[in-house]
Length: 502
Image (cartoon, rainbow, N blue to C red; front, side):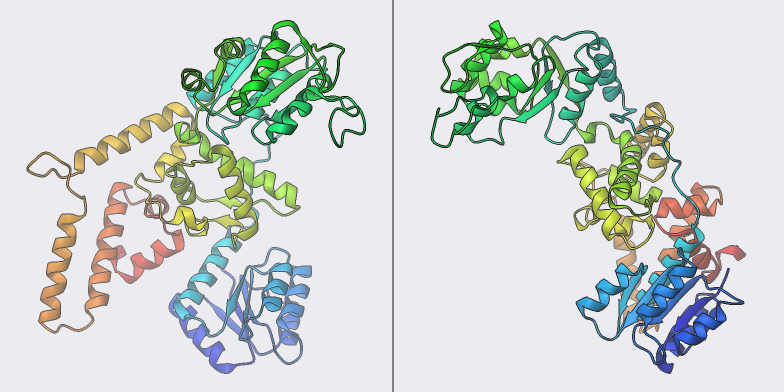
């Protein structure tokens, strides 16, 4: 591996980082100014560059720009004692890997540099490009049922009611139903009935004549007219005001309606697809939704599963959204580790696919490295424990059957090893070993033994790594993935703890 280059005119900073990185078995080369760095690039190159922002002979930002012009993929970490907004923005706009304000915690600085090294070692790896952008992604059995239903409806113009939670992709399905129908050559017009005030919704749907109300200075075509010959998608139909439901029912019954303020009947040749996250049967019983309209809409019902019901689709969706975000922002697409995918697969996603897409947008902008790890995920995901091993995430890429088997095996294994109390209720899994840990620590502290923290930490890490290697039959990379750590970390720990000698 190539050396880490440290650039700083402060000798103490260079000394501290050199010693810390040498202990981690990195090769280090130090410089006092930007000129020497640029000259050294003629016969050598770094794995990672760590540079101060203010130095004699050229600033770190100027050096960053020159380095990036020659080595676009080199991770550069900018250090500064001037922790101001302009410095941070300039660093990131210049393509810095991260921004390290002084004074810094040395272990955290080393960890950041290690992550930059891991990123540079992954240089050149990328997700397999997709030949064609899919309309809807989904390998889960529930999504396959949706695909089959779209296929069966492809030659029909029957009314469809799509149900499912907010953010589950109801408009995408409606668009697919239109695209694969005999009306594909006509317009697809969508309206969210919950997002438009009641006083304006009637005009939005049916249009209005000039002078029909204050502000109606011209005649306006409504959505039914705009969708003539095509498909009208009425999203959140369950929130439609009761009096407008009557007008909608008439259009669905005989194809006629009147513009607001109009006297001449209009005819509409429109296929209606409605969607809702509401329980329409319950709303009918409560008297807030017309029963005859419900039956008119409920010709074919298509239920979209929530994302938590199709966890095996999360890896493919995540990679797709990361690439989509990169294209939209004009940046290089991010990759994601199995550990990060495993944590995503344990999240409930109350906002469903839309929430996952937003998270991928966040990662594209905010994640410091091209390779997204579990620690890079947004704060709301950090507190969610990953109860299942990362093998489940890997299994998800092999299809729904493999995923189901992996998830079932993991769940049954967890259930089998959970200790039971006298009343048969599962006790906390960590109660026994924590009690033992507390007992040993108490004895060592009472005896006045030195280095209690280091001793107990080494014992814990050694047993954890030993167990992971035992489960993976000595495969270090797989053990690191299961533990949620990097492969360089597990190799270093094995050496430090003397596990390779056993």
